[in-house]
Every structure is written in C-alpha cells, then in structure tokens.
Image (cartoon, rainbow, N blue to C red; front, side, top):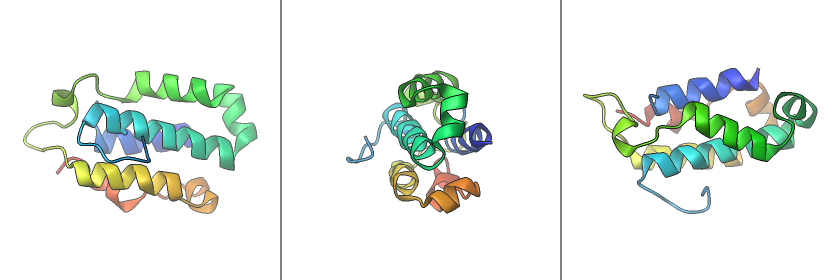
Length: 116
C-alpha cells in the first residue's frame, strides 16, 4: 500500500528528495524525500513497514535505487523543468505529515509540482 504511494510521488515529481536543509539538487532532494517517506512509514505503520522492508535503512536504500534519478539532468522530462522550491516543500510536507493523511495516501500538494 505505501509502496504505491512513493512510486506515485517520485514518478510524478522525479521522472525516473536532508529534510532539515534546503537544496536545489534533484538527486539530493529525491534522497531526502525517500528518507522522509520511509521514516514516516516506519513511524506510522511499523508492522507493515517492517514486513515490507525489515528496517528503515533498507527502505531508504531500496527506494533510492528504485525511484531516484542518478543525475540532475534525469530529474524531469523536457520540456518540464525541476522546481527546487516545490521539491523542498514536498520533503518538508512528508516529514510533517500526520499518520492519518499518510495512511490515506494524501500526497503533500507541493509534491505534485516538482517538475513544471
């Protein structure tokens, strides 16, 4: 269930996101988004998350490998361009999201506009 959510967020935002600081690098931001997502998943739904990934570290490494671009140029499909402000807001949105919204697959609004 949560796997589908991260795929949607990252494929809409980073065709292919440190939540405490701002960045303009799409690869770094994707890593930060994955970290925020996995931490939220393990906080809100620990049993389900452990069944799927065993550990938060495994969730992060697996999802980075599966979902993040490897170069900044691969972040958005032309003619779209990467919007660092929205990507940073997406990371913050996941980090601050309630477990209820997370469980209901509510995507932070900024995540829908990472590539514009």
